[in-house]
Every structure is written in structure tokens, then in C-alpha cells.
Amino acid sequence: MTLEEIINVPTAPFPEDLADDIWDDDNRCCYSADGTKLLDAENFPADVTVREGCHILCDEVFAFQDYMAQDRKIGEDIPLDERDSFLEKIHLPSTLTHIGKAVFNECGFLESIRLPKSLLYIGEEAFCDCWNLERISCPASLRAIGPRAFQGCINLYQVRLNKGLEAIGEEAFDDCESLESILIPSGTLDKFLTLIPKQYHEFLEEL
Image (tube, rainbow, N blue to C red):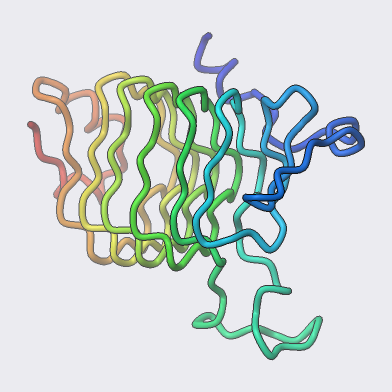
């Protein structure tokens, strides 16, 4: 697939997907009828295993939702320190290619994640405000990281990028106040000086 084709794969669920979904009671998730999309997760447990055969995590699947706030009325403003999704651990399948928009937004208990070798795209705001996420390692397959993908990950101190990356969105690492190093493959410095905004250049380290 070309980079444009990868970025333009729809990650929002279609109405027909939701009309004919398959429920996974163990993980409190639902999938498209063909099993290729994880459509939604409701009151999901802290530890979730995504089924093999799933290609796309649809937009906002594990993101914080207002109903998750304890002792808060519907419509009430929720303070930032209470905006934590329930998710603590996620096991991704070897078939996954796309992480959609804001999938893990405000998953404040998520400390680590292993991205599969099949992954092509990390969407806009995918890990935004994952406050306890400390490290991220991009698989060799990854082609693009969307805008603000890791914005607000205040404990993220190390990012390891792969040689095959072709696009990194604006503000991908903004407000990552603990960031110490962005590791890049040997011989790729010129490439990443072009891909990565200047404010992150001081963190670049060749392996």
C-alpha cells in the first residue's frame, strides 16, 4: 500500500458494522461481523485481549468517556485528575494494521504497550494523555504516526522509531515533559531531521 492509501483507511465504524456486530463478553468488546474491526468497548475490564484477525481499532474505542468518572453526574465537568480510562493492559493481535483516532485517549493507567509487527499506522491523538506511558517502540512495519499521537504523555521518556517511517504528524510529542531520547536507526539522522519538528531534534539519538 502507498502511504496515502494507508493514511486514508477509514477507522470510524460504519453503520452497517454496528448493525451486525459480534460481542465478546470476556473482554466487553464488539467486532464487525467479519472480525476485522474492533468497534467499541463498554465498561471493559482492566486487561483486554484483542482477537486475532482484527485489523483496525476503531476511533476512541478505549478512550475515556464521561460515564467512567465515579461519583459524577451526567453533564458535570470532570476534573483532569479524574479523567482516567479503565484500561491498564492491552494485548494486540499479530494482524493489526491501524490504530484509529484517539483510541487510547486518556488511558491514564496504561504504562506500556507492545505494538505488533503488522502495524502500519498510529492515528491522530491515538495515545494522547496516556499519562503513565513510559516508552514506545515502533515496529519495522510502521509507516506513519498521526498528529498529536503522543501529546500529553507526561511520563514518556523514550521513543524508538523505525527506519520505514514516512510521516510524523504535527505535535506528535508535544507536552511530553519527561522525554529524554528519540532513538533512530543508524544512518537515518538526515531523514529524521526532516520528518521531526525542530523542537524535538535535541532528543534524537542514532542507534
